Each structure stands twice: as C-alpha cells, then as structure tokens.
Length: 265
Image (cartoon, rainbow, N blue to C red; front, side, top):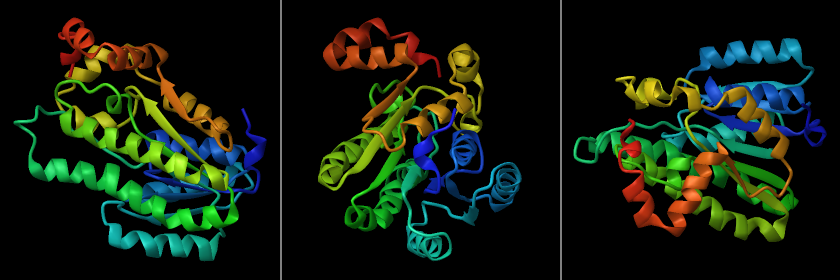
C-alpha cells in the first residue's frame, strides 16, 4: 500500500538497522519518500540502503548514530540538512528494554534505557522542531509501547521510559497544533523483532506470548499510512489496548484479575 502524500518528502528514522525501523524504511521508500536511516550498526544500514536504492527510485542516506550520545546528535542532523535537505518527518524508533524486577535491575541498565528511550528521543526531536514550526508543516512519530499505558511486573524501568515518551508526545502535540505539525504516538504490544534478544534473554516471555506478537512489516505499513494525518495514536493489538483502557478506568480490578497473566515475562 502506497501513501501518495510522501512522494519526494524526507523521512528520518532512528533505530533503522533492523526490526520495525527497517520495515518503516522500506514502506516509506515504496511510497516515494527519501529516507535517512540512523543507527549504531552502519554495516547493516549500508545493506538496507543498497536494497532500497536498487528497488525504489529514491534517495537513501545512512549515518551512524547512538542516540544515547546526545552530544553527537546535532552534527548528524546538520549533515542531513546539508546533504539531503529539510526533514519533513521524524520517526523516533530507537529504543530497548530489559525485563527485570526492580530490585534486580542495575542502575546502569535503567540509565541506559532512559538515555536511549527518552533523552535521545527528545534530543532528536529538538533538532527538527524549529524548522517544522517555521515551515508550518511536519510530522513527528514516537514509538512508545503498550507498556507505557499498562505497566506489568518485571518491566518497571522500561514502562517508566515509555510513560515518559507518551507524556512528552501528548504535550508536544498541543504545542505544535497551531503550526500544523502532527505528533503521533505508536503504542504496540510485543513485536516479532530482535528486541527480545536483550529484553528477554531467558526466552520465557517469547514462548508465552509468541502467538500474539505483531508482524513488524504490517505495523510499519500502518505507521507509514498515518503520516501527514492527524492520527493521535496507533494502538495495537486492539485487545491489548482495550486492557489499557480498562486499567485507566478500573486499575485495582485489572491488577487483581490480571495478576498471574502479568507475570508472563
């Protein structure tokens, strides 16, 4: 499926070396967008770039970026503007999680998650805000999580980072509304990607929820179709989002009824 609104536009994607970020890159390129792929693993980005340029007649720029190193972010975005032009869409996809109970989680891991999932996301966003406001157009898409709406055991720090992303996005959406700049939060449940190689080293969680995992290619197409629309949130799967809504209304009941189910990690 093609989004005709993207033809000739420039889309920057962080965490684009695999999984959802990679699939978003392919879907955006298929719609005629020029894509800029950022991630720590430049070798993987180069292979994706080669595939995109071979298949689609669009520009594809790649650069190494660890979003936790906020001091590197301004120079990378300055380079993008110089080489490929102004940024129309920013998709903050970089992120990771580690599933451990709070008493087991190291402060280093907690800081790492906040540095990537929150501080890095905000720092990348700040690089495009002034330009989008002045141009009165643009779209910022932040990949959060259902964990940011309904926290479960063994994900306290990860859920906290995604709560922060949703809060930041909600405020930003209102700030940018007068400037015709859209902000969409994507809140997926578990996705079939390498995310769980780090998050769930035991493999227990994947075994328990494998049949419910989202297909990254399908999710990427939904995200790309939402670009340049006023869609506030993308919440998938729907049944999991229903649980989040119920939790907002009846938190004590959901915690009591969902007790054992929440310990699937």
